[in-house]
Amino acid sequence: MELAVLVPVLLLATSLGAIIVVVVNGLTERAGLRQSLRQVTGPVVENERDRELLDPLRQRAIDPFFAGLTSLGRRLTPVGYVEKVRRKFLLAGISDQRAVDRFLAIRAATVVAAVVVVVVLLLGNVLGLSGLVRVAVPGLLAAVLVLGPDSWINKRVEARQREIQTSLPDVLDLLVISVEAGLGFEQAMDRVIHSVPGPLSDEFARVLGETRAGAARADAMRAMDDRCGVGELRSFVMSIIQADTFGVSIGRVLRSQAEEMRVKRRQNAEERAQKAPVKMLIPMVFCIFPALFAIILGPAVINMMTTM
Image (tube, rainbow, N blue to C red; front, side, top):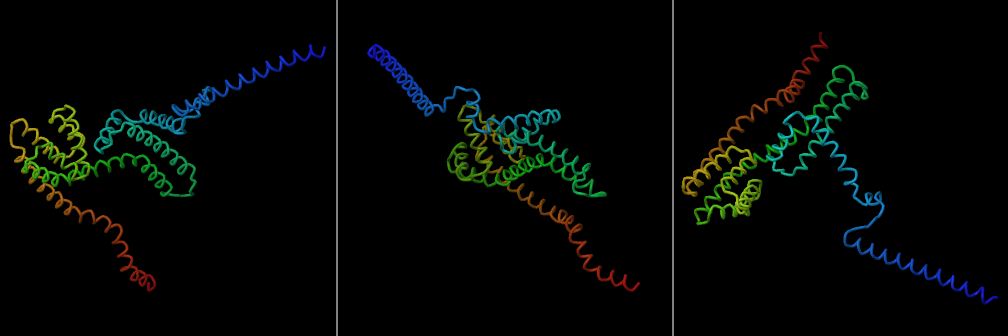
């Protein structure tokens, strides 16, 4: 009887042991497969929520937030403003579309922040101001928040155009020397790219890339002029296109353009020098003269008040 009971117990224990071994082996193989896939393609998660949590925080929270701000910014901006912003980013040398979206998102956030500042400071009077100062401070902060992004991109455009305008005569001199030394126009541009770093050399590199990709030189030069928006560079581009069209010597055209650009740069420097005294008059009137008047006339006014 004991043997009859022992045999089924042994069979049941063996069966349970075999089942446990099979399950453990299956789980081990599955874990090894997951580890191998994780090394190749990343972690494998069956739960959808856990799979989404494996994404970085920027992709899960920050990017959707900025996408919502970008959509809000497109709705709040007037018609044609997005194209103007895209044009300004192109002139500033920023060709990434995501930069335009981030700019619109930041501008929407600054507009909302300006409204909040006006409501909190003007209506709530958190700072405890009174009189004209109570209106001037929120208005000034709101103006800075609303006009700040546009002012930033305008400064970027002006700085880049000024740098291109300043470096153009030196670049043309190097082109003249290279062409007269026997190099072709494209080889001379390649030498300029390696010798004179800057936004103009970056544009020349893009022109060379477009021409080597199959675009016509005239189209590549016009595209460069459209990306820069500098009058002196436009004159240079038109001269090169006309020289290619009519078969004029490139070296002669480059030499005349280099001389003209140097004259224009000297004239621009003289113009800025003549504007400097007029610009200095504003801080002198509002900052220096009041201090001088206070120092010179202050004792006399005090004596007059005491004697009278």
